[in-house]
Image 1 (cartoon, rainbow, N blue to C red):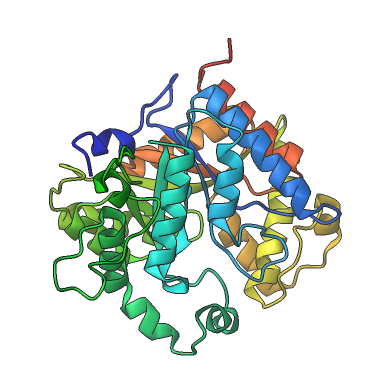
Image 2: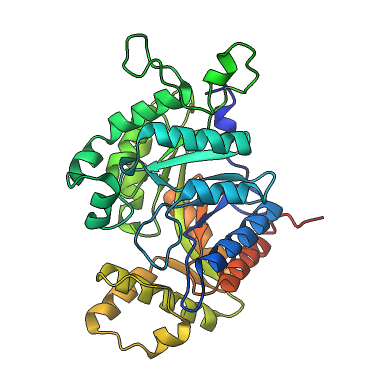
Length: 366
């Protein structure tokens, strides 16, 4: 990585935001909507995010979930790159055990060639789906083995990204293209730059690994809030300076939805929570409408889940969401907040990011 690698990682806060703000897009598909609608909404949101000074825009790999159309992050990022000029684009994340490291190096080398200097490669070790789907993806039922091999897979991927396998290694003559080999080939003028690697996690494993390797760390607070502070503490305690970073840098994913009135926020959040109930009970589907959620007869167990889940969703008016985000940042010491707005309609999600940007006085387009 170049000497200015840390500048690509460390964001810039704008307006009155305590830290840089970013966007995590799950490309959610609501009932009565299509994947095309969801992808068009993604373009609208990334354009807004770029215009208003959000730091980065990531998409997450999921599989076999009708309500989440983000099974192919690299494809979506190429689409977003064609509609933006400055904002950083990345994976939040690619689930590395699902893929050959060379394939990911090639995909993100291609993205780097499309959008030079503004691509992030976020990596996770979970499958991003259920066990049966993971087995279909990986062509094996030895799923634990894939997760246990994550450090080795990561090391291999970084070697491909840097094109620096040592002499005598079986892969020493194999090159990820586009990539650094094109800069060192006769007549080569390709930049040797490659995307910075982030590690993602919802427990302590990736936190410790990211710290040991001196890499930036992204924690999934939006679905593992009870582990946030322990994981961040472990990351900071484990951190060793590297060629990438001289000090820890941690962002957290946060479910945040702002609406023009508090009642509407509660309606939208209930629909998103019903979607999670169905997912957690093996019935994944499209994100239901608020009307469907209001009419749904929740069991006592489901009501308990809804209450627990929504306790970690910051929602309400723009001022309420701003206050909640400020408090969360103070409690965790996060260096960056990555916001994900889960709602049935794309217009609601777009409006949420607009309201949050206004609440923090983020830059407005000229």
